[in-house]
Image 1 (cartoon, one colour):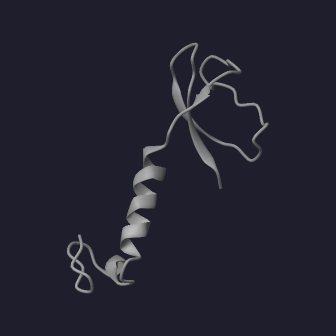
Image 2: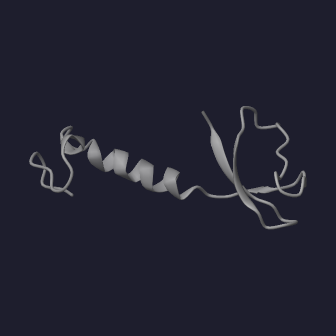
Length: 73
């Protein structure tokens, strides 16, 4: 499910919201403003990098720390 991070330009409140359609209106839960801006999600960026790195040998996800298959962390 697409959960996005937003910040309200009016009250600067940061919040997450489930958005099913691109044209769906998102309101700030604190002040009700209808124009929050979408933030870059740090989880999506680091999560994608880990997934790519972890799939390099296929066994990286099996144990934390140094991988016995490829030697990466």
